[in-house]
Figure 1 (cartoon, one colour):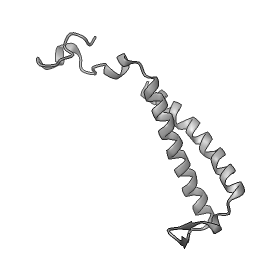
Figure 2 (figure 1 turned 45 degrees about the vertical axis):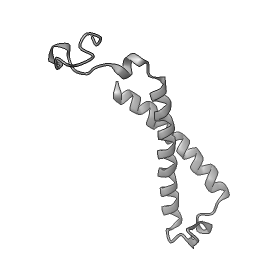
Figure 3 (figure 1 turned 135 degrees about the vertical axis):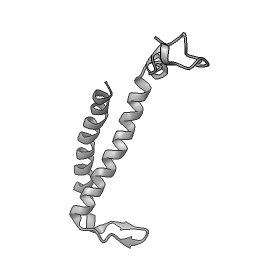
Length: 97
């Protein structure tokens, strides 16, 4: 189930990062960019690569937050330990299946 959720997060984020990359660099020349007042010393391809991964991380964070907020309370509070292996003072001893 977690691998499926990971793909729900990573694949749309990858597609959106590619679209953002095309839109941003259709209007911005990487050689004109500055960081802290200094021109970037990276090649165009380096700027494209770093920007793509930055866009991908940002959109993955947004997708992960959406996925987290769509989970039911039961999924979030489910106890992964079997009932007979839980400690005696576990507050979920009777409420978890």
